Image (cartoon, rainbow, N blue to C red; front, side):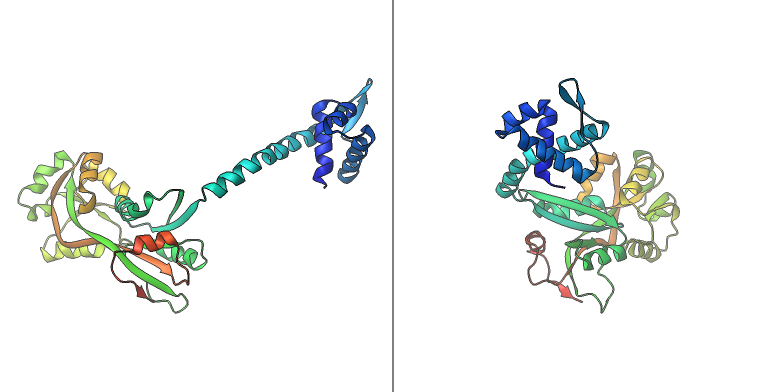
Length: 295
């Protein structure tokens, strides 16, 4: 289809006739008529039909006009959109988030780039294996996970520890007194909420109980850390949270800190592919943290 012919048709339809369209376009009526007839031949339908001394749109012509309106409205917006893009280019950062990571900790880890002008941050949550597959296909710029990936000879990856945080037990006010009394031995006598085994921190939490010779009353296990906190805030059980976001957890969920989980730390690892030219925002995130390890 020739869009030049479509434009002539659109002008005829909006002006209400060939003569007015010719006057607006500054061409002869015969030229306008010829252009419209060429479009009709290309589409295989009649777009106009005689009505009195003028023309009216056929049903096919009405459909064509509706489509043409959208096309030329978008065309009118094109110069402004292009100029805006040239003046303020978007800096896209696509990050994959392992589903076991606490969201508040992720926000804190990403904070060095959140103030970058023209940032377009895209976050995708999934299991680590699927995220690494997307990373290998260059659909993601970076993956954040709670552990380094297993060695894979088919993938040239690097891992970089972005940070970590100690953890503490938290409880709703109605459970806090019982949990805080004679802590940590009291943890054997209160209901407990834990992350599921998919989270790297679950094993250290289990070992914490074993080390203290405590048998927890686990009443709930959650894959999503925000959901775990929500149920904990409702009073279902005492739950773990990272110290790095202590103030936020207390204020947002209305809970109290019971005590520290000595020897347990939630870690955040950045995983990327080895590239000759690194994404500038990825480089900004990695700057100032520990050395990266290739695999």
